[in-house]
Image 1 (cartoon, rainbow, N blue to C red):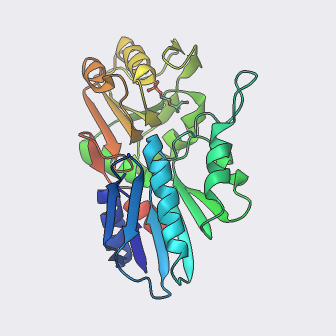
Image 2 (image 1 turned 90 degrees about the vertical axis):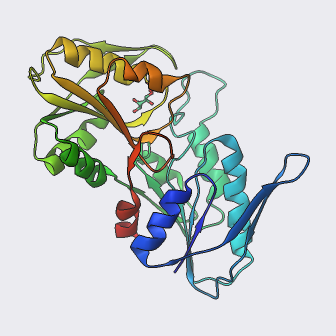
Length: 282
Ligand code: R5P
């Protein structure tokens, strides 16, 4: 098996190749003087099974993903799986206002023509993978890996910041061996969220808030403040995809005791890998 890593998550590609005992292909990725991207796969695929690991975030990585897909098509291979660790545009999975696109569906349509199979990781809405029509598609849960890291750190309680992540919080809680609960969130707009006051028994406990994405940090900040009001001893923010837009990390630092994220998007909080979860499915 051959793993090809795009420039968006090189550590994850390399960890995945190790997990699978596969070869990590050598690549060349550069830009032409006019800004257009260029990619090249430097090793032959020789009819092997091939796994491309490439995000659709930020925008330039969408093009890079497509170029790698096209380059792979020029080889002989037995099966081509596209792993999209962070599926950018997944949150616009419906029309919120007239005249808007369903951006997640647009991504699906642009990419489904190439691979035999697509794997996403903790995608915002599991139902998005059902839009892939011309290839197999599945979402991989990173809950076991998040739980492993939280167990190592030591937490007493897992909280989902909204109803959308209840199942993840339950799975992580089960993995750590501690109870879980959820808060109720209302999103006012892309920057503002409201968390409803709720009675959860977190007094004196080390609590972890588990979410798929941290972007502006608004959700976690509001959730953390609520948990501290309820008497939580410490609050850790744990997510799969750490985007940390608009200086989110420094604002999170003021209300959370720790912030951890996976290697789908490499950043200073990356502290666990989802490679084992992807490898299990592959
Ligand atoms: C939304 O439903 C997601 O699960 C995350 O809670 C959200 O994307 C986080 O965004 P932000 O950090 O900007 O509040």
